[in-house]
Image 1 (cartoon, rainbow, N blue to C red):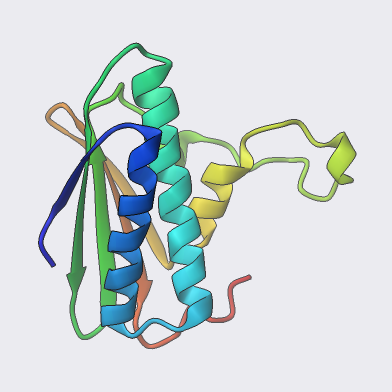
Image 2 (image 1 turned 120 degrees about the vertical axis):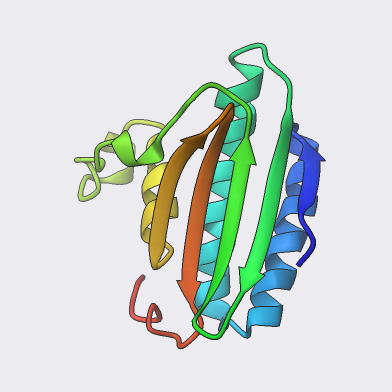
Length: 144
């Protein structure tokens, strides 16, 4: 698919979702895998916009590229915000607590990392690059 570049603002999230939904459809992902991928992308893009740009008083774009091969759909999400590696974040230790006993925040990254078959992060030049891979053979359909 052609790369998508959108301003790093919250109103761009709809366009980001549409792009990823189209890629998931083209890759033939089932509804469950598509939903998990969309949730992961939504969390990552929102974090890039809110924390990487808005809270840091920076502006920039989000860059998305979807590639499809026989085995997987791969989505690359890049931003030029401050360096942030989601893999450095610890797993929330309150997942079994009642909702009212859980702190706000922290689950989005956890859901994003666990909603796809592979997640990679790297800093490339001035960009954060998040790579999300979902296998096309429905091998991930057991994840919940």
